[in-house]
Image 1 (cartoon, rainbow, N blue to C red):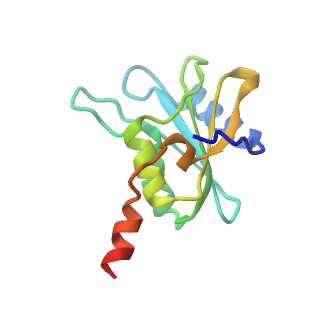
Image 2: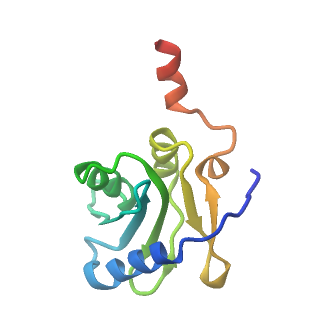
Length: 137
């Protein structure tokens, strides 16, 4: 893991924090995510907790972005409700984000130590699904 930090998109962190504060209520929605599309738009979403699992905010955001025609994302961040701050993506989300957006930057860290890192740095020596698709062509 190289853990190279990039400039942090603080507007994105504020957008996710705002959604977490205003839209996450109770146990059904506990994390908000925000991503910046390549065209500069910010897309937001919340998770859907359920005893069967349910999608994380990052995965809901992938679908919400596609629904808005934003197929290329540059940066993503998730923020917990109740002022929990930035929440790193789980393993499943890391793999999906890497497969969909191999050049994505992910904002991680706590408080004044947040940083943006390449998604690949969060999954060292990972399998890239896109590589498999390219090999089949």
